[in-house]
Image (tube, rainbow, N blue to C red; front, side, top):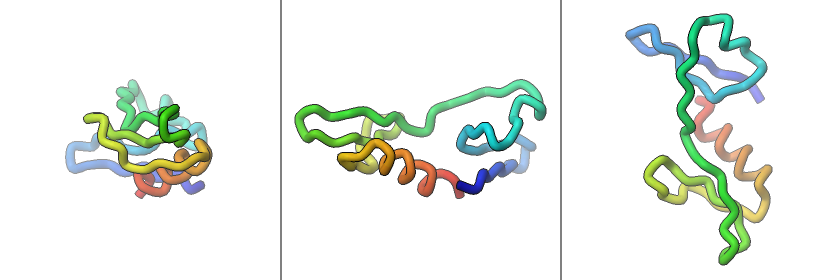
Length: 75
């Protein structure tokens, strides 16, 4: 996985958290989850959901859901 750190016009950095970049060395962090990954017992699948609870992706494998999250949001 390649770590991607981008900055907006106001100098605010955005990225998926990773230990590959020592983010604390940049200053005080404010962390917000882009998604949640939860197991749905009725479908027997892991689901990636956005902040509103909308299912963005599902798969029987949690690792696949994590990989999808990284691919989707690490641009």
